[in-house]
Amino acid sequence: MTGPTLGPVEIHSDFRAEQLVRRMGIRVLTCRPGLVTGAMPVDGNRQPFGILHGGANAVLAETLGSVAAFLHAGPDGNAAGLELSCTHHRWVSAGTVTGTCTPLHEAQSTATYQIIITDDLGRRTCTARLTCVVSRRPTPPVDQGAT
Image (cartoon, rainbow, N blue to C red; front, side, top):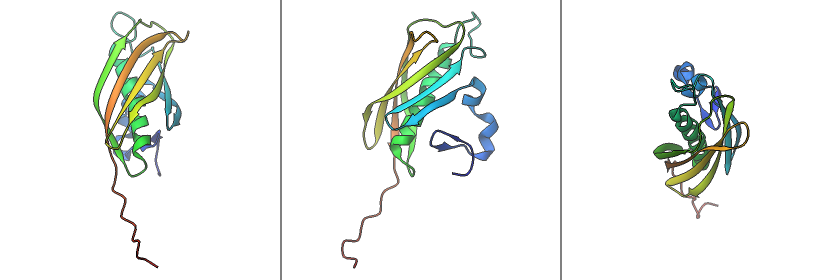
């Protein structure tokens, strides 16, 4: 990889200034197979009523789950979200929210992740589930007859 990345995903140079994660202030904190975490400020991501927008939770969840799916797909693979569901448990009016993404199911062609979002006091504010389609470049067969 030569340019900026989001986890394992290189950001194409034509689109670096247009990244939603940048506009929303999302930072990936941990990025390894089985665990992706990230944080997002409430400031700049509010509803007109002054609380964190539910769509912002969805963006954080989809970001973390997609990064996890790309890790699962491997260096020659790809991933894209198929379905996202979010349950908003409590509102947040200040500070930072943190998402913790763990796999529920990782297979050859699909992967499903649970993303738990908490406030600065560690209280669960949202539970999300993301399912992604995963594709991998086929591995060439090994020639068993080679000497």
